Image 1 (cartoon, rainbow, N blue to C red):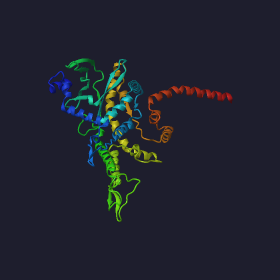
Image 2: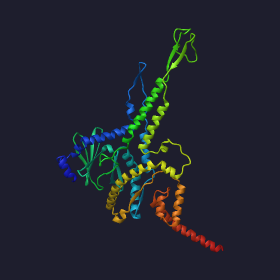
Image 3: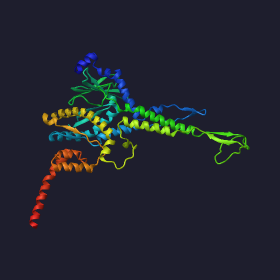
Image 4: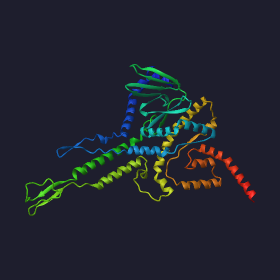
Length: 445
């Protein structure tokens, strides 16, 4: 079922069907959920809605301590996988052209933002287009503005981007053939611009969602309840410490001088009759129970989010071997491998779009060359780089690894193609220098 059949059946051939699509209840609920996530990340937590309390007949301003651990955890997941740019591997001709596209379009930066949006909101979208200089560029579409259209077979057949600026609604409708821009400036909806669509529909990047095959699930869903409990525990414990630790003064017996207890007894004294006593009665602050609850919640937060405790300064380390470091980051490696898989699914569509757009520029590849193209992720796991280089050197000496594979594994090199080209440029110079040294040696003899 294509878009025109879908619009005919679902929207009764309404020419402005995209407005009705964006106003559907399920679309509005999804967008509201994304906006709630954005507000949470900006600091609007449940603890900020905590009401004031009454104490000693007066209103007491309670503590509202916000812990922005969510930002730290999600930023760690993104940076752990993409701190080092992805490396393209495959046929030299294909890799060289795609590397040029990546450099011109700054796609490595786009990759970082795509993953950031995906882990925060579950789904992110990218649209490729030609710039005025005929360079391939990438445009990110905000998740809260995205309204993909799927048919009954879960195939994307259209895409609508909707946003509002100064009380004016703007709609960008993407189809397989065209890109149309609408707005209601002046009170009525109107078609403003229309372009030919060369790259196809926007590319979705989504993580796993047990309840939907069309939209991902935010990683915030797993940790918000734990963070709310942490903030509630710390805020109430702080209030309890200040409210109840002061104590109530108690006098037993008769005071010998004065009619009442002095209001400022610090540094002074009171006189009591024989057998009298004076003391403060206060509640005990159970710091051990607080510490146990806090540690348990924090450990649960790290476990569920697959965040190494050492990355959050929750563990002391010293003199660890390579194997021990890998074990500490095993959960982070599992999470990064899943994120890499989700990105690869989107990259496959991106590569197809780039291939199609390069054909318009007269650059073509055969299927064998194109199918060799792949992407290599280099997570930022702490490693013993000296040991890695020594192992690679041994393998190279045994003839068990190619120079191209060596360049892919060395931690200091992120652009294999450029490094291969540099080595080729240096080879003639190195040969001339060696021949010159040999001649000088023979003359000296």
